[in-house]
Image (cartoon, helix red, strand yellow):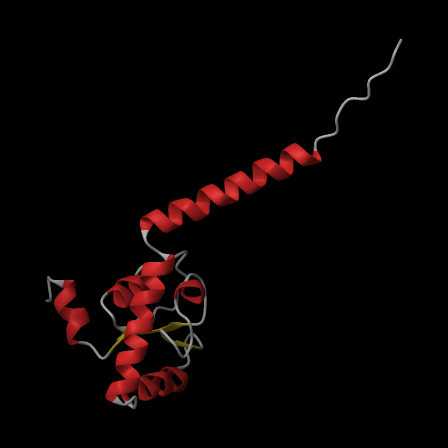
Length: 130
């Protein structure tokens, strides 16, 4: 068994996750992208957020072996120049969108927006001179 995942990622032309179950977030595409590797994963759950089809990897229909084989064929048929360009896009995608600092900032932005919208939606009491 491989105990150092970085060696496994570095030796792969593309990383395949053929799970049939949904993953809420799915960190494997992010690990692959951080290692400048393209990802092939099912077209569901967190994989929809972490893989940009045709740029950082491919999605296949879950349980469809022919679709999976087609994705693998596409990955393996890339020229060295195409593969290298997409690998750089995969790494850039992770670095720009999924670093902890970025994710914290995005989460705080959601909270700030919700607070502002909540403050604006509250009705102000009507003053009367009684």
